[in-house]
Length: 95
Image (cartoon, rainbow, N blue to C red):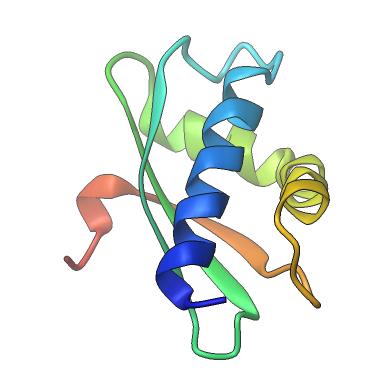
């Protein structure tokens, strides 16, 4: 698969998986702004934003749920190896 296809699929899976999280630190609406994968598909940088809530707390909650979110990606995106997820604030993105 091409990197753009992988990034689009990971974005789709994470958007729904994050919406289902039951952590009070995760606001009702979290937007996965962008996903970038490294050339070897070993790392996926996920840039998120939220209209309400504390962004550092959101990033902490997502890092806490990383294992669950990574399993969701592994189930829904057919890849030989699931990339490690790394969460960042969308404001940190280098477009």
